[in-house]
Length: 406
Ligand code: CTP
Image (cartoon, rainbow, N blue to C red):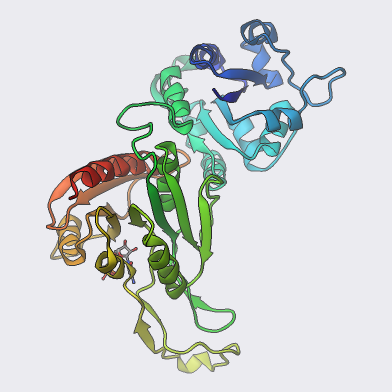
């Protein structure tokens, strides 16, 4: 059973954290609660002390303290903050440590789950959205707030997710549930995932590249870890934190990515090409910075890079499942699904996850919608939600595909 820190910040939804605490304890987890000073107006420290049987502190500088922020951080396997207010979110995104909860968060390098709760007007504020994006990039998970009635007689999106939903996310992160979307369905499987985007150097300071951050690859890695898989991520210029439980191999160019993926695929059961791979690279690399009269323009000579997915499919061993990705926008003559279908047939991967580029934004993590196509272009399923949620659904389909593989 896990050691869980439950952070509670100051909002009316703090009472729901009591229910969450009971659920966590009910499944045998050891829980310590760290309320912020402001939250004590909503649920007092005596409640937390009575329910946990542990001393409860809110500040770092306390005489006779039994647990300080460093000890708390060392003790915990998982840190959950529910509710997370806009104020605490802002502090965490900026690395502030003005109370025990924020200081512990800074000292804790394990998995963090945030359940925000605030008025819709605050939720939609660009500063709040920016802070949530910063935390997502730093590796925090979010449980999106729900819609309904709020304090002040208002309604809209912003109320704390239900304790059951937060509890379910905790179980998924701890890899404990035995449901379709979480558990040990990939126990013993070795999964190789490419993430990020490759860069092709022109000279020591310039490169041709793309905007991929690596979030999709990271979420796949996390979802696979939650399902009990052994995960390797080959990361090309990833700008977000990758899970510590995975083996991480860093590369820069398509040639390096190809080498790592092809070598490592030999002992992998599932290979997922989530990286955005440069299709072309400069024919020549200039050792010295290119000096040009750019006013006359510059013509670059490019050559095709390795088609890693095609090579993986050629070398595919029995029982191995290979997944590709395709981001499509569609054009005047073809919709994005038709384009995805044509690519699925052309590529011949066991699964091609087709993504319509330009989906709407969610809290912390962008919502996305994927269509899964088989090697004959048949639609095998679709998934929508945060990238973590669609990653879980993709892996559920991979498990099914691997069961029917000869
Ligand atoms: N891919 C690859 N090697 C390449 C290019 C792409 O392995 N040199 C993989 C990507 O990781 C992805 C899939 O192939 O899983 C489809 O990528 P995409 O760029 O959409 O495919 P392309 O063949 O480059 O198609 P397009 O002509 O639309 O760019």
